[in-house]
Image 1 (cartoon, rainbow, N blue to C red):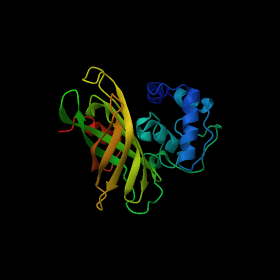
Image 2: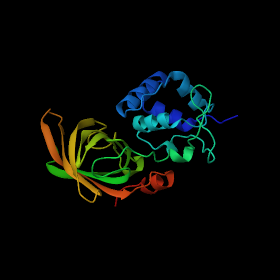
Image 3: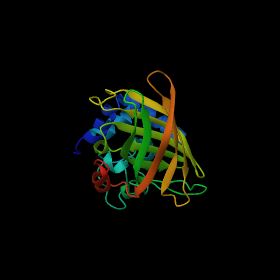
Image 4: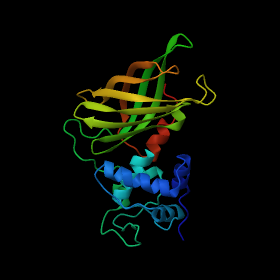
Length: 247
């Protein structure tokens, strides 16, 4: 008897989603990356109960888009090389070992290829209340599916949590950001969000540009933002290594 997948359940409940909500989010994610799926509440229940040891690749990619985490951190059991993976009907895929799911092969991009891995995110902002400028830093994990990047901060790298949803078009990266500030910090858990546009350097190892967002008085603020590449791996060991405050 398989053990329940408590890691996946913890991630889902941490996102404040019911199993129905989670299934709908997986369907929407599949459509966004051009891989429609038939996720439903029953499938989520079977994953969380351990009845299905690992998702098929189409679901693995949707899970990464929705959660912002690599499939290796979502509590699924490792499958020996060549062994089939259960699907939602209780049958089996013909091939596809789980080892191929940890870092899915992205669709080729026009210029820079894959941006997946660990990056250091750093932005600057002015605090009108304190009359000074500050920098926010996070280690973030970047997952890529085609031309879409899902970016999530590692929880130990800062007191606030950061997420970005981006689209790559050649050397231009455009999207949105959300930051949940420290509940006991200066901003007392306030949630801020806005837009961001970055240019990827020819090396592919740095993205730099500007963010825009609203202040507490609904004034429009802006400032510099950059992401600097640190590691191409998204394995648990690598993420544990960077789950700390940046130096």
